Image 1 (tube, rainbow, N blue to C red):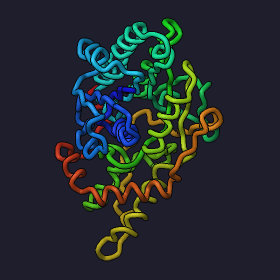
Image 2 (image 1 turned 30 degrees about the vertical axis):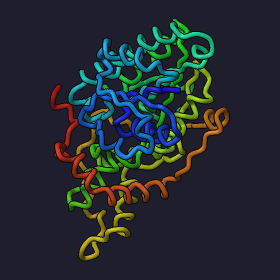
Image 3 (image 1 turned 45 degrees about the horizontal axis):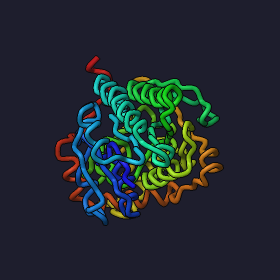
Image 4 (image 1 turned 180 degrees about the horizontal axis):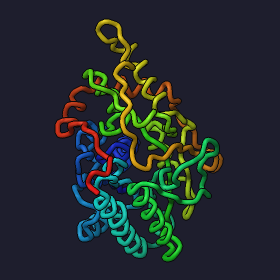
Length: 351
């Protein structure tokens, strides 16, 4: 069985590729290799003969159709996306192009491919749209998102993902294409590009740089280890019901300021600063992101009930393992940050 993983050289996509490859599945990675797509994320696969890499933009109709024709996939995990909220605030257009138009290209190719299948192959084909909890907008102090929560995106990134989710559902309802949709919380773990909060905090701390925290750091996010997310995606693909949505979460709510303090405490233990000062002294509160949602939280009860989903990592274990990975992989970190100056973006200056 051959599966396609779009965005397979990115953070979440590469975790999924590594997982599937380790199990002996034939995987085709489709990735444009933008700034966050990194071939190093796919180095050392245990079964390299079962992995095929296609450097392709998902907006390229001819190339996507060639890939479908060549590999005849039994399933598609669609993870390719522009994903950083700050970048979407400064420059929304690439998010619409990739996340909306690219998804449309993939869905059209999937539909043609699926219509040409026979028997069991047609019955078993699935297209999994991997999305985010940010499409649901902002929660108050209580409650959690579930599969019936209304879409209320508040950033250009979230709006682009909401549009792509709606396209996927529309192709399922209108054409009968077997669609699955997942929405997850904030991912963390190995191989994450350092524009995101956790690797940025760790790498800045190790270099003695300031640790920027937006506003007062009171925003709440629901964190899940990337390997747990990858496991959940495979479970959804194998056991999920076509046409259904599954929210994937590890019940890991945390305020941003508390998360940064936890990371500092871990670093204080693993690599104490000279003189004994805490890394927390490097925390600096900066101007908040425009339109910053106050709280996200996921209710994963449906996935737990229907799929038997359970995460392997709790937040304490996962954060410590993540910090240790960045400490142990300095070469990856240097290469990943070579063209990234870690300067502040996302204040809407381009608009």
